[in-house]
Structure formats: C-alpha cells, structure tokens
Image 1 (cartoon, one colour):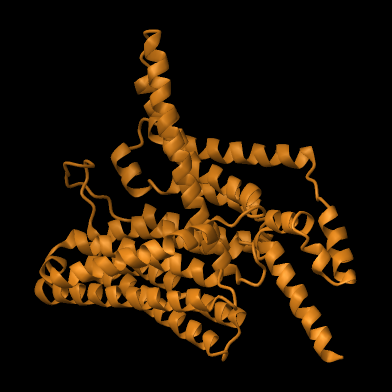
Image 2 (cartoon, rainbow, N blue to C red; image 1 turned 90 degrees about the vertical axis):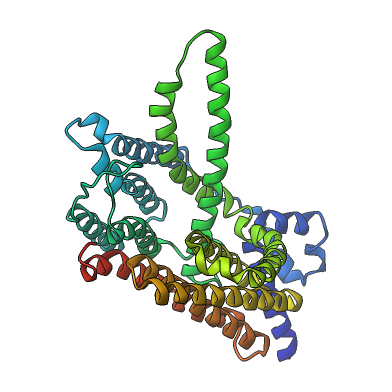
Length: 424
C-alpha cells in the first residue's frame, strides 16, 4: 500500500518541479501531448483545474508598476546629470567618486518595490547603503592630474569605488523573495539567477539602443538637423543609467514565469565554455611566462573566473537528479575551473614575491581564493549528491550558505583596505 502512495508522491513532486521551471511548456504538454491522460484520474483532475486558473493583474497595479519604473529611471537620470544641474559641483570628483550611485539608487529603489520588501529589510538595506555612501563621501579627494579622468585615484580608493556596487548588490539579496522560479532552490541561488538575467537583458537593451541611436542620427541628417550632441549628452546617458532598471522590470514581470533564461544560457554555453577552457589551459601551459608577467592577463583571469563560476552555479541549480551525464560533465567543468584558478593563484603569488604587496594584488588574490573555495565546496556537494549521501536540494542549500564569503571579502576590500593602507 505504501509503494503506490510513494510513487504518486514522487510523481506529484516531479510535475510540480516541471511546472515551476517552465509553465508554458508544461501547459502545452498537458493539453496537446496527452501528458494529462497518462496521469492517475485524481491527479489529472487536480492539474486540469489548476491550469484552467489564470491569475490576472488589475490595470491599476500595472499603471502603478510603470509609474514606479518611470520614476526610478527619471531619478537615476537626474542624479547622473547632477553636475550639469548644479554647476558648483565638480564633475571630476563627482563622476570619479560617485559614478556607481545614480544607477545603484534607481536600481535599489525599483527592486525594493518590485520584491515587495518588508519594512525591516528595507531599513537594513538603507543602513548599509547610507553607510557606503558616507564612507565614499569622506574618502580623501584626489588632486593629482591624470590624462584620462583629470584626477588620479589611489589604489585603495579605486578599489572602494568598484567594490561598493558589488557589496550593495549582495545586500539587496536580503530583499529578494523566495517564491520566484523553482522554490526548491535557495534564495541566494535564485538571486544570482535574477542578477545574471538582468545583466543579459541590459546588454540586449544597450545593443538595441546603439542601433536606435544610429538610425536616429541618420533620420535627422536627411532633414539637415544635427542632434548628435544633445542626443548623446541627454538621451544616451539617460538610457545607459535606465537600462538595468528596465531590465529588472522585464526579467521579474515577463520572463520568470515563462522561461528560465539562465538555465537556457547555462545549457548552451556549458559545453562551449568547457572546450574553450580546455584549449585555453593547453596554450596557457605552453606560455606560462606570459601569464606570470602580464598584469592585464591576470585581470582577464578574474573576469573569466567570475563568468565560469556563474555558469557552473546555474548548471548546478538546474541539475536534475537523473541527469548523470550532465553531473559528470559538470564535475569536469569544475575540475577544469579549479586547475585554471590554481594557475592564476600561482601567477599572482609570483608577482607578489617579485614586486611586493599592493592593495590591487591582495584584492585579486583574495577574490581568486573566494572563487577557488566556492568551486571546492561545489565539487564536494556535487560528488556527495552523486554518491546519494546528500539530496540535491540539501546540497544546494549548503552551497548557498558558503556564498557568504563573497560579501564578506567585498566589504573588507571596500571598507577595511583603505584604512589598513592609509588611503594610498
């Protein structure tokens, strides 16, 4: 008697997971491909009633959502042009110190609304944001002239400016709800999916914006009007700061319930990344001297590790218990990533031993170690899952807890490094 009940329970969980991963495909299979007819009668009736129910949103809610979206974009645009609105505000200091904040403020404002964030979490996010803003405000100004920006940034101040946006985005994860995508995934993993999809859609919006810009210039030239300066100074700048906010709106409201783009991207790019990295590893071993001597190569290494880590995380979170081939393929990708990471660590260590410690080198080696430790955790949990020591959901939740090292390291670089190195 227990065995049929267990089979029904397993089937129910499987159907629920398939529905949450891709509701549109599930509906088509149920109605068109006779999926429903193969189910037990009670289960068939349940899903028939459930799929017949279509939740609707009121026009008032839609209008409110677009109004908040427009307000966030408008506010971000005003902030990015603030030195032009307030002539006494130094453009060099403002755009060097505070360039991430106009985008961050608009993005935070809209995401807090989008996620329906509880008041207590809003207070926590605001405390971290205000502290970060004030910390940047009290950083020493840089007056040495530089050919590129008009001012020269010290190493620690530059690290603070580029790490604070990452820190704020990790703090925003506190507000992310746990009811989007597949509920079996922990909130941290779902939030990484969300941010990655926002980045993908931001890139798509920017590419469309570039095309629109060229078309607009061409159209106005046909009637003898030159609008390039006005368009670049206002429309393009406003579009740049608004694109992540619009992407967040699109991802949250129009994609998560129809298709999982991060899952699609991970499935398409995982094999490509694997063979690319395999070739890269082979030629890197043949040209180790270049890796150890070129600083730009090490910076590229870090971006590559971040992208690899994101793809592996997506692949792991979308893994099915029965996908043994993909599991072993993922282990191969993990081992390859750790091998390349080890080479990067050796290269940075060699530069440290030859040229001494600097804030930049310590920051790079620290971020590499964070990726390496996370890849180790991921490999361990994946192997334990394959050995049936851990359930896949347990492994995901334990791995998600290990991601705390990233906001901790980012906070150390952003706030502690300047004090340790005396803002040099």
